[in-house]
Structures are given as C-alpha cells and as structure tokens.
Length: 386
Image 1: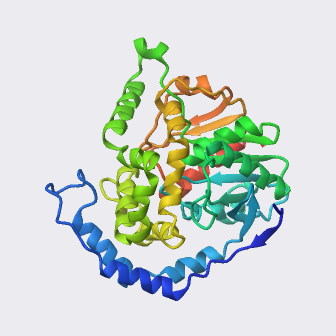
Image 2: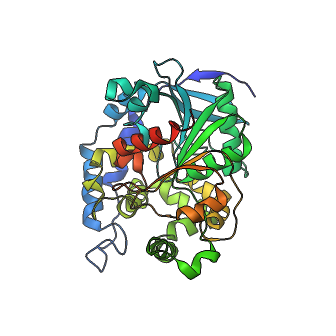
C-alpha cells in the first residue's frame, strides 16, 4: 500500500457515451402498470420520456466539466483505490469536514453545497463558518475501486475515512453523513473520537425505546408508523440488495433503463417533492446522479454494501442495538426523511447531542434538494464544537 495521493480527472471515452445511447434506444419495454400512479413502480410513460431525453438531449460533457472544476483525487487505502473531492477553504483555520453520501446517491449530491461550505464569505455567510471539505465516493461507488472480496462494511469504511483524513494532514475534523454516510459517520465517532470535533447526521439512526411506549408523543407515533410503512412498502430494493446483490447487479450494469428506474423510484419516494422528483430536482440533476452509477458500472458493487451492512443498520433503526456514540453530535431530521427517531430515543445511543432540529422542508437527499437549508444545519451544529 502507498500513501500517494494523485490528482484525478473524469474523462469518459466518447464510445462509452455512444454505447449508452444505443442501449437506451434499444430498450425492450414492458407493458404499462395496471394502475395509473407510482404504486407499482416508475410509470412507463415517464421512464420512456426520461430515457428518451437521456439518449438524445442530456449533456454529460457539461457535467463532466463541472465536476472536473472541483479538485478530485484518488488514493489507495487498505488495498482499495478511493476517489474523493478535496476542496480547501481560502479561510485560515477552517475546520476539515468529511461528508459521506449513501445509496442511491453520489458525490453529485454535494455539488451545490461545497462552495458555501468552503467559502461562506462569497455566498453571503460568516467567514468563521468555513470548512475544508472532503467528499469521498464510497467503496464500490462512483470512481472509487470495487472491493473484490467481502468485508467492506460500514466499520471498515469508517476506518478508511480516518486514514484518509490523517493522510490529508487533518488531526481534528468533523464528519457529516446521510443514508450510508450516517452509519459511517457514527462508526467514525466510535473509532476515532480523539480526532473528531463532532458528527452531524441526517438523520441519526436509533431504535424506538420500548420504555416510552406507554406515553408516546404524536411525533413518536408517526415515527413508528413510518418504520412500519418502510418495512412493508419501501424495503424491497433493500431486501434484494441485502441478500442477492449479484442477481440484481446484472440488470443494473447491463440495462441503463433498469438502472434509471431502480434509482429514480427512490427519488420519487424519498424526496420532499410533492409527488414527482422533478418538482425538486431537475431532469439533468437526476441523470447526473444515475451517470455516476452507469459510467463506472457500479450497479452491482454499490448494491453489495447492503449485503455487508444492512442487517446491522436495520438493528440500529428498529431493533435493540444501541452501540453508543459519545462524540458531540448534531441531528437534523428533514420532514420526508425515512427514519425520524425522537430526541429521547436518539439520546439512548448518541450520548452527547448538542444540536437537534427538524427543518420545514427537505427529504432524504437534503444537500441535493435543499442545499441552503442543509448548509445552515451543518453550520449551526459545528459552531458549537469548533
């Protein structure tokens, strides 16, 4: 293993883009669903229109150029190449912050927040809120390497992130995470507490406390109902990826239409979008994110993280596993978030909650959907622990 950090630029061969267009135009479509809404999945007419746009009008080169304006790098950690954005603030004394995405997201989610976080003065903010931002691609995602053997679960990823921050010269830093990033950041809090200023989670994962079931608040009853709804209606993808990721991986790597449907369904279900993902994200933004799965062929490798860690994460969501985290913690729970534990439930696992807020708008992809609110939340917590 080498500690070398090398600059990275995205340069997709034109043949890959031509092949994508050819596959999209040759899609073998099923018949429409027997219902007119999204309850059986992405409606045929919408997916056909989205794929038509993807094949004929979408401009990957514009997105590629925008991403290449950000300082990107790769380094090998524990035998695996890790891709990351490392945007340093012009402000002396800025706090290093590692931000971790999840599935079906990518570093694309943070494109709109990197500028305000690194250079708040240029975006109407207080210079004292500046961060040096590190955004890695999870193993098996984006332009990071794909694990060739089992073992890359959330704990090992957290250990790799601690190595990455040390390698970048940061002896004290913060961590922020959503989806898988929530669990990775919590594990960082357990593994590297001596170097962490704190962790900001959207949302914290903590199971309901049976001791409260006799005097549940209305908010807690809604949280329990959401857990039940998620288990019954929203977890099919998780069961498949958590048990047979290789099987679904064939479709996700071979068929761009299948990959698009698999991912876009979650942007319909998990965003605060009033019934349609394009109410909160543009068509280009949705496809930008899908491209970070299509171009590096990560449909299968990304799904395998569920096989590695979803059982453990489910115990943190609704089981009895507490695994206490003692570092200072900030919690922001957006209204369309999947898990919405109450503060008294979360305090059983996160022993030092310094900040708790429930913003009025936003969903599971908060930085992508509501970048201004996301930045406000991150700043508000880290002001308390800088």
